[in-house]
Image (cartoon, rainbow over all chains, first blue to last red; front, side, top):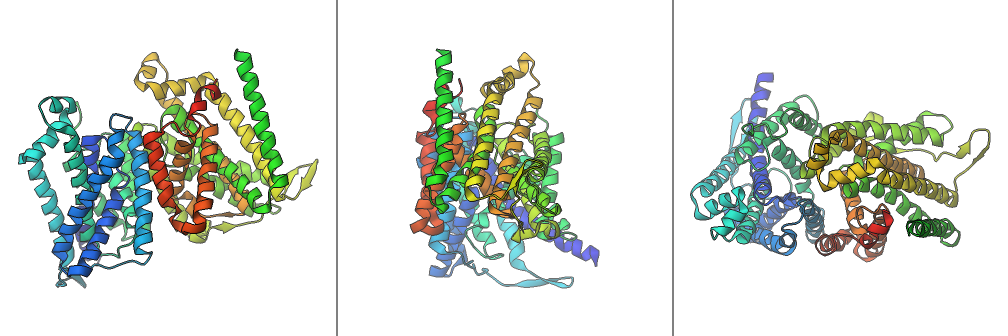
Length: 288
Length: 317
């Protein structure tokens, strides 16, 4: 019985871990490349879910909703970046925390005003299930994990081989040199912010069917994502994915014994231990 | 010249305190309570300024200190049979100091953004503990208790009215301000400011930077805890909402709006924010945070010095 529970929780942990990885990789990307700690990332997640709800209501097509949410929120992210964060370029990165905190307040309350406090629901694209021991497990959850992996994998390929991806990596390594080589650095930064926002929105739509969509749903995720980003090592994509799965598995196993709301304490213990013994991150090579 | 600046400072200080002391005599009940509340939030914001303005560490975890001060005071008022004000202050400060030591030990290993994120996560841990430990903390409902009497054993004992409570809070805030000002002007405060300006160089000169940061976080936490005690005494309840990190965010907003590194600025920022909320929530109800957020973003971009930024030099003389 316990073994079965552990196996089920392993599957649950991997599924949430992949969504968390999708959220956190946007966050770590934005931090690693632009030195911006994006407090509003959870709000892009939430807005993505809402755009998904609206598109679903209009068209009934889940895949269209996923595309629309990513594109619209990416565009919104670009506009927000141009209006609020670009003027802060070159100032102390702490200013960006303050500005994005303000953005988060505005977006969250705008969603509350626009959509009301009642949670909305996104219908699952398909409702197939399979039996896992004594539990009926929806295929959709497995699909989420695969889709998240596909999006992250596609993004990794894009960073590795795409022209814009190479620009992004060049900008990360040396902003001044990249600019000297003719790379339009300001537009690369805007693009990165848009991509990060779009990824958050995509995970919002994917996660929407599992729980209700409401204006505060970003809050839980942003804290988890911050923990993941610090544990995984700021700015490291691989470390971020490993840390997401590690922490989600840990929390999933923890819920076998404590209530789900307390499981964040376990994640925090990992965070504290990481800070004590390996402040550069658990899953990155030791810096020289 | 130096003497004259000092004279001007003290005259201004006495004038402002006298004005605030006289205010409850003319204000109606609602605004009297409102003014007291501004002072309490101002004390919280001022405690955070030691870190943001003087040490260069943005703390997103001040709600933990504030909340623990509140719950410490609540415990003292519920445990002792005739509720005792001084015991409440003592226990609130002890609680805040314990949390302060814990957070300081871990968070000061990090700089800049990492410090902000860790303090945020730590305050959230305390929120979860308080929220879920229902037997001890009352969970979501919080704790209610009676307001203690203002008493000095053997001298006098009286019930708090809203006016005497205001004077008591004003006295605590004014003394706290003088103490914090003294701290920032002492050699200790100078080292903190040099950490803000250039941490590596401060370390190279030979100052134990980590130890200074730990003490700074603890001082800041103590005064935040004091604000928590005052809030508990004023409102006769403690609730987990005050440990939630949005409160820490508000504290940062007070600082940025009022002007960091001035100590007075955060109080002005708190007053501005609370008045704005009061005015806007009359016709925007809970959506007042949309315009407040927009104003905040605009101030970060266009006016990073805050409302009182122009006074930064004279106030720190």
